[in-house]
Length: 444
Image 1 (cartoon, helix red, strand yellow):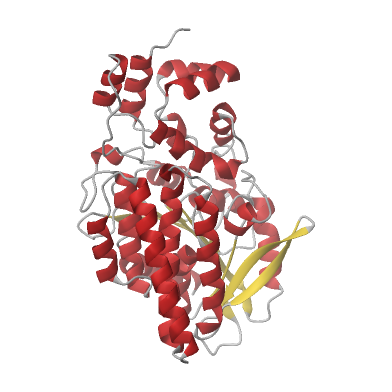
Image 2: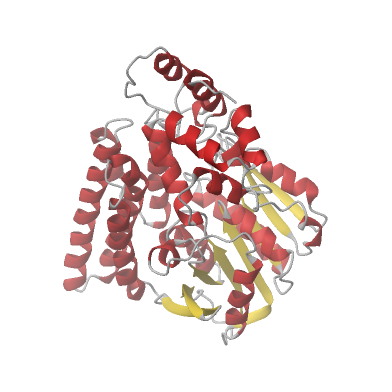
């Protein structure tokens, strides 16, 4: 098979992989022209989405998320808007530097507040710092120094750990036994005087931080009387950076020990254990539910039937043929030769938690993350969010809903709600309202 640079570039552009080349760029490359810096779509459907601040959809999504966190006191809106004006669209170096500097500034505010005994001020400022450091991790690979991602993650994690004691009640760090080691987790005590309380287990996505578990679940849950338990599973956060654990598709082997641990807690009502997965957690949670039957209700935000769809959608037909035929050397060779630097950086970020460096092995690995053969085993009620303009797994929330035979509810979020896009980054308040109204009723 012979694949020209023009054919490959145009195929990637049509599919819209990561920060892949636009058709105009691919044509220029095919004609021998120099690659010009452009504002590129960096999610599979990013080229088709309206934007508020940046044409580059990765920049847009990260900063919408940063703004959305202000709903739960995780961001100073004025500072975020100021940073947006300072950052050059599509310039990863400028974004990384600005966000790291803002994180340092917020951390200094937190430390000064803490030393003066201003507990709530310190708690909020530590959340601001985490917001900025977490945002910086998304720009590290494209900044020219991928090692910066561990620096930003460690700064963020340090601020998270320092903030735990400042919550009311304090967040408890816990260790969850898992295959001879322990997964790091956090337990959030709900604002309820009841001896037994409902528990919501929070499952993160492929690149989320502990901060995301507070913002997209725990904050809303504890205010409504739920306890919450979250953890870094294989390939996530602490498990990735400190323990060297990689993703696994059979997430029931992760969730069953988590449920065992939850049931050891005195305050947990064993009949009211629920679970939520965000982003790629929208695959992991349904997968676990097919085997773990002690869970009474579940939320997938969004629903994900086939994780590989967000990867293989990026490939032109000849590359798909190589992948399906198992022609690893040829596949890797074309990827290394044909991809532009921005796309390679995006793929490095996405491949890292799978524990592989080969393009072929990464794409092939994602094909094991598919619910088709187990979806009929799910029994507990499920809520599936369906945000408009879902970029990574468009249409899969509806597909999951249609395939489920258990009690099920599909909840749309629209642009007019201010809650569209992947995991509703600018609509945490409305998301909490709809999710917990359903959960309250389901667990009643």
